[in-house]
Length: 549
Image (tube, rainbow, N blue to C red; front, side, top):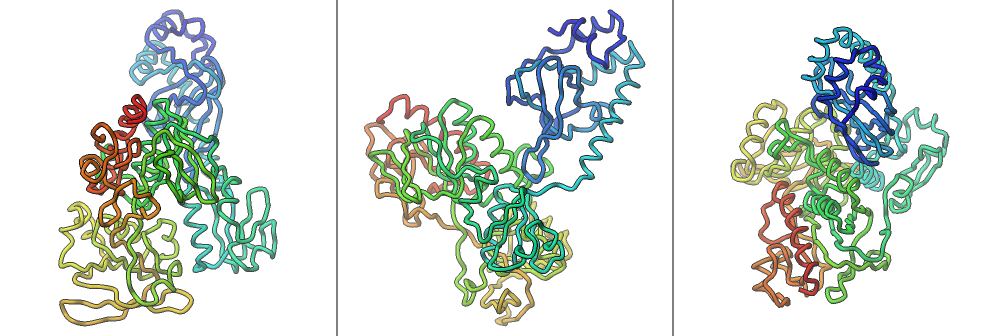
């Protein structure tokens, strides 16, 4: 327990009598934390934390990246402003060294204040000072990790921006003609092609950088640290991220491989309203960012920009692009799916130049005050329409069917009806696109009226479903006619090679599991993918206990 003598050394409690100190000592906890352990998370309800021994640091998520914004040494307070203003914590606090911390809750503090009224004034003064410090931090513009220069509709520039945004790397994007380009340390060179041109925080300039070479400079891992792991997870969507969290937390050496950026398709969702525990919704980007930070904190290794090109079932090895090979005692396939392509003439020519598969939030600025179109009738399309409606002049949802109810959640349909600038074109299809250097117009055919009309368009986002990309898998991992991986009972009927029955999520190859959207028969929902991710680790444990299956 925290002794009265220890409490008396804390500046806030200086001058308290033995009765007050005895009361506190008898009701506050003695919390011991190890390096990296969090004592409070951003958004938690109010309380007052005090460092007794050790070193704590205050962190805050800025553009999806956790940054240290303060330190708390013995005697220092954390939570003055939330306690006084009755607000959630604006930041998190974790241990740098082995530390002892105590927590004074609202009830305990109010009881103490009744015994020693001047404590409230002291805390108010401390809170005012802390608020002034927070205001200074808030007023300071965030410093980007890099600056990207290039034309808006350059495909290479678009690919780099998507990669950076998906990996939660703060960056500024400038057009070559922007006056701010001349103020960069690289000077006029930044405005010259070819693009993109990248300037790092230390002033280093890179022209058309390869993302794999750029990634390490941004703190991203691109190469596995070991030759063998207990479990290797291929894909970092919600299912894969969950497996990484549970695998690492349960002591398995865990590697997660991702060819692009963690989050998968869910990471591009502007607002997920029906995910348990978020009554006001959560963006897919935020959900993925939280899960990624959690996986890393628990010890999972995350490698990006890498593609698995081959899997040897017998040797249990994976070959990455570039020829690098690693061994896994168990493997979890969580690759998700890829957006289905739309067969319209000239569409590929304008891909990345106003035509996009999916609906990346990073494109919001390019739609500001313009007319845009989205193709799709599912929740992804509805969420994207809601998001872009806050930026575009008009958002037209192009739907092949006669209504949205068959494929879109009721809550989303209701929300779309509240947006006066969201239009729904039923029984309609985009049959042509027009533009030279970038998209300028779309042609829409209506099967009801038998008419085709042309509309000016600044952007076209295509969300028409997705397909499994599993061509690289060997014959030993069976798939259905559409490429989705068979598991469980389906695997048992399709050539299971083990001596026992396959586990629920196990493929036709013992020790190789399939979860999330890539699994045949899966429910295409984030919550189900999360559930399968945790279940897969339970099955991995069972498999490893009787290795050889």
